[in-house]
Length: 214
Image (cartoon, rainbow, N blue to C red; front, side, top):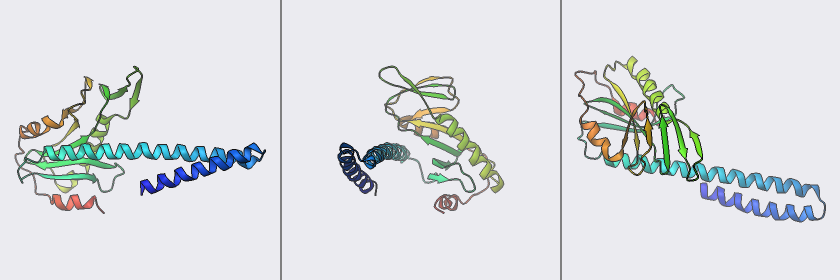
């Protein structure tokens, strides 16, 4: 669908621009409107491409993390892209349930240079320009709080933890990070060393996972 949309936008841009420039050459004011409209169409297409690339990168990162957890035994349950019912929180990348309780995993497939100071994150460009970005650590903590609030009325008494997972090639400069930050390779050992819960009430996690589809 995205390719069809982009192809149509590109064709309309070229035709509108060509016609608009021709009309402009003979003093037709409609030509100016067509030029402006075609430029707006090009801008919209560019924004769409940027968003599509972001979605693709995010999905690739989540797939890598799921593969990294492939050696976990069957006592673990993973729910991916879970939308917490009754909230406007957005989807949670990955929720892992097991002997440790609940682990909320936020995945970022960062490929360039980043720095973190507390909950403030910046992308550092090659020319030294620093661009502040949406804080993944704040996003993770919001998700943890939302899941805690959802599970408590269901009788969940175990811990709900959070971890931010980045690709091994991403080595951000961290100063006063407020959440656990790991790479894909260190996630499995981290989970395996978590202290097991003493006792938690049973919850139908598969049913909870299905709610993300509703």
